[in-house]
Length: 253
Length: 197
Image 1 (cartoon, rainbow over the protein chains, first blue to last red):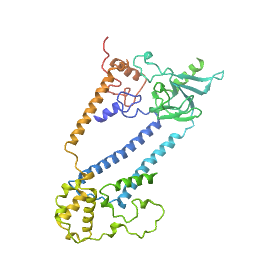
Image 2 (image 1 turned 45 degrees about the vertical axis):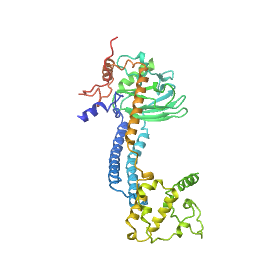
Image 3 (image 1 turned 30 degrees about the vertical axis):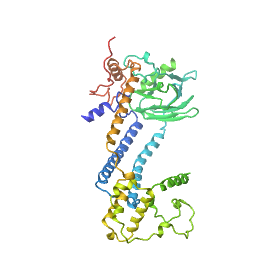
Image 4 (image 1 turned 135 degrees about the vertical axis):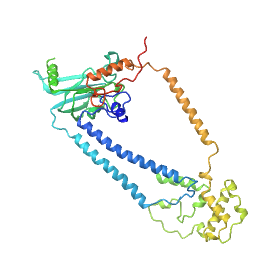
């Protein structure tokens, strides 16, 4: 019953009302992040219960009525100090190893087949697909603005919908190259496990391998000015065939 | 800077009456242990070191009802009495009178100074004050809320039901959410129906 509720309400792919857990993962990176999170939560639960048990025991056993003499000159105990130093260090090692493994795996950009350049502006994102050029040597380039509340069609998501989505093919190694034109922004899409700061004058990169078709929403994640909340990100993953059709439309249009 | 603040704190603490209890240090100053350089041993001996153990019991009237008198005693008297008791504790404790033992225990560990009992009803007074301030905060929130803009049009049951259809068409949440097979949750619906105008 509880598991059904958790599955139904918490593991989702676009933000939902009262969502408390991660959105559905759509890339191996996000699956790794989720697994690391679950591992760390296990240690966290162990630590929480141990410390709570210790605190309650101390409060119950060393209350003035039960233990009236305060050992006010007892201020050093080698064994207990060794225990409370080595145990946390050991737990930190247990957390650090899988964490570094994931970090370096995510950092690796796997020989991408496609590059998408995303640039943050106050307050919209602009995109380029520099891999594909037409006869005039032009590549696909477009801006992606939020759809204001007054223009939303029935059922569309407020503050998440954009006029031009990023279209990428599924099952294809894609490199997002991320930068900014004015101030620092941050390009984030939870389902794909991307969050990379966009700095003016610097190029950041993130590797994406989307393993299913769908639409994934994200938001700028670095305070960038008054309309920081109004520069959402919408990435749509389509089959390779549909992607090529879209590409042709863009080139010809 | 740190040393300065420590020495200030030490100066403050030495003004407290309980300092007499702690004045058994053999070093020249309270913070001498913090000095980096080794200090030459001074030939003069601190006055408290000259005190010898006492074999004469402290008279009963001096110690009688110490629990009631202690806090009203001037600091110097407190210090003197404690020093006397301390000297008595240098001999075999079996030789101490019961009253001396009781007084020594009470002065060291009794409910005075930082260990004093909280005034009666203090917990209740704190609870009432916290409840009052919480009530004021809630009231303030509702007053501010009265001036808020109406909710956006997307916060209605009809819109959110349309969102469910839209999400299915977009294949959003296909594993555990709205587009998953056998999904029975409410999806994006969270608001009551829009008011008919």
